[in-house]
Image (cartoon, rainbow, N blue to C red; front, top):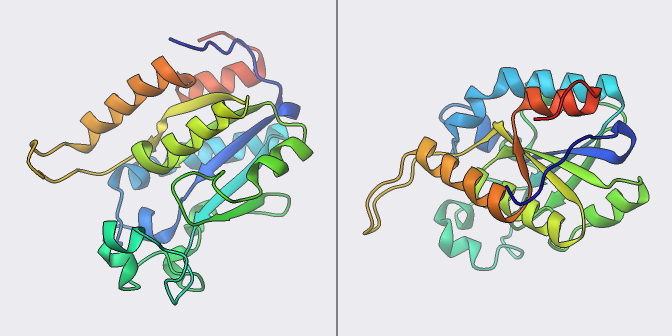
Amino acid sequence: MSLKIDSLDPNTTALLLIDLQNDFVEPGAPLETPMAYQNLPRLKELVSFCRDRGIQLIYTRHAHDADGSDMGLFAQIYPGLGEGAALIEGQRGAQIFDELAPQEGDLMVRKQRYSGFFQTNLDLTLRSNGIRDVAIAGATSEDCCLATARDAMYRGYRVAFLSDATGTYDYPDIGYGPVKAEDLHRTILTVVGVTTGHVMTVEEFQALVSGDSQP
């Protein structure tokens, strides 16, 4: 493991909830991420725990303008975006899934690329709130969660990547064989653990915040 976090201070820790939007979480959604829906009970427990401990919650929400002017190459990489089928500002699909809805005191960052830091005010928001450590939860493991974790590390934040509160979906065969969601997720956990931050479970995160143990 490249980085070991031995303790977490609620006053200097933020929970980054990455793209837990209807278009990702809802069964049958355009960008359905089954692992995100499967993780709902754990995510709800995590959110409740952090609110009780005074940990700052920051949601990221990936949403594009309806005219597509901010999509760039995403319109080609994800044809559904270019056609306005998902992640469009003002549409229900771009909103946070109801069971994880923000509350008073939570913060929201709108983004248009994988990373929550790319051309947003996330870094300024974290520094303004005295944050030194960030926990990553949400979807998807290999895209927005990984990109945000990497950018956090680049900026000097310690990263706790929550293995059972992140997830992805099956990848099709584009010439190298199909990839199951669980296999891809495990690979990303290994990559993060070696190169970026401390991979831990929600339970281990809670223990570090509470000062009960060291994973």
